Length: 122
Image 1 (cartoon, rainbow, N blue to C red):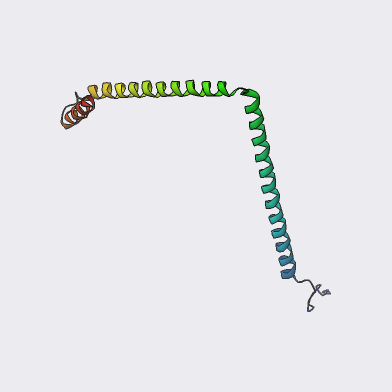
Image 2 (image 1 turned 135 degrees about the vertical axis):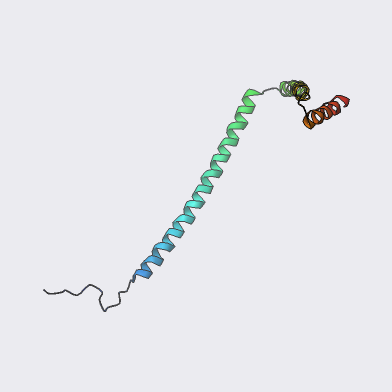
């Protein structure tokens, strides 16, 4: 059996594995940086396109400023009315539930009675 000498055995190659690894790593870093720059540029272009689209949609949908002010006014009125009615209903439901909990024997019933009395005073 003859053993053939392994390539690079006893010789130093001009491109050692560590050099190849460093070159590959630096190439990967450069491509990663350029990819990041490219992604940022695409994101900025997408953002500008979305802004233009929204502006065109706004200009097409709302051609008169008076209509915009009127719609926003009534929207605010209905929002305020809905908030007031929703809050009133929630407080009424809480008081109704507390009136049931007053009947619990022991200290808990007294505690819930105190909470209900406080809510009714205000």
